[in-house]
Amino acid sequence: MRSDRGADSPTADQATVRRHNLAVVLTHLRDNGPRSRARVADDTGLNKATVSSLVAELVDRRLVREGEAERGAVGRPGQTIGLDGEHVVALAAEVNVDFIAALAMNLRGEVVAERRVPLDTAGSEPAPVLNELAALVKRVAGPLQRGGARPAGLAVAMPGLVETATGILDDAPNLGWSKVRVRDELGERLGGLGVEIRLENEANVGALAEVAARSGSSVRNLLLLTGAAGVGGGIVTAGRLVRGEHGFAGEVGHMRVDPAGRRCGCGQRGCWETVVGLNALLAAAANRNDPVRDPALDVAERLAELDRRAAAGHGRTLAALDDVATWLALGAGMLVNVLNPEVLVLGGWFAALGHHLAEPLEADLAAHVYAPGAGGCRVECSTLGFSAALRGGALQVLDAVFDDPTVVAPGDHTNEPRPRRSTR
Ligand SMILES: [Zn+2]
Image (cartoon, rainbow, N blue to C red; front, side):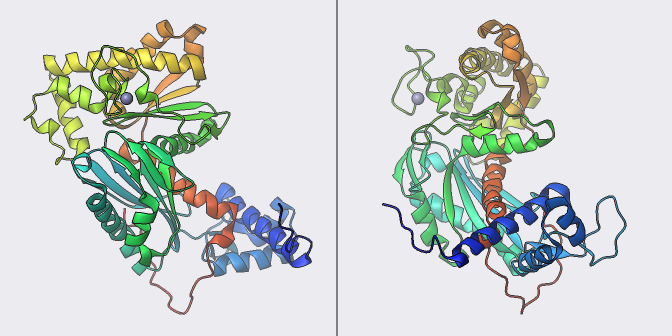
């Protein structure tokens, strides 16, 4: 049954048109930079009076502000309008094996605060980890809020099967967590923040960040392999994220590549991530008491140490990397045969040690892929480090604002904050 309540009323139609026009103006300013109202009217085909009224509302919602210099033109301050980079921020948080992280991004897509904290999440119950995560989000958001910024939403990225609609983490074998009500649990801990929380799979949002990072070259078919304890796949095909029927697409780490192999966290034997996941590399490269295997240390520092060993010609490290490269090519070949991506992006630890992996992978892909020249697929290392999932999550929050600027309530202008500089 369809509800027709208000569908024929002119006010409902007018509100819809106005929301659409607010989105047009805000998105236009994002895509084209600061400019005068008259120019926005010319560019968008909206009339000047309408643009003035829309801009007034966007200013009231703290989404745009006056006085930005017009790109490529000379204009007096006050004549141009541009995105407000101070007053609305998107928040993102992540729980992964060995770390938790949080990030804030302004409306211009610039990261204004980011923190990553080493934490043995896999050795913990969900509740204390979510306590730590909530505290971290508050540490990131707090100073921005005190400077006058308001969060537009919080995206939470997790490694595993995520039900975005319910906010439940169905299963994360590398954390040892299943059926965790992440959205609700975190919502209780962050009640004061007053934000909508959205749960996402880390590889999915990571892939969105990788596409955004390549916006200049308009990549439309991309496969991200996230290298962590496990391996996730983020698939973008024809410009759209592939989620599958229940949002569980891309669990590439559990392709069985060696039925007689090691037991995987998922219960199967010989999954791809048992041979290319970070734990597989660490176990092959170092003894158990070696600091590179200590989850209390920052994962980027541990990888930098492995990189130093490889550069110094350390035999065990190089053999471990060679082994991973061989298995990586085998699984990546299967995926490239199925998906024919334009770019295969190595993320996470794969990128941190990318100069040992990307070249042999690209060479081997040609042998594993039926289409000539690996179907035109090139291998690139992510430049987003361990921030890809956070950035992708924040971009999703921003997308919701650009789609409908009215999700951000009009601001309280009675308590004007001091101008504040980026905390990055
Ligand atoms: Zn598995």
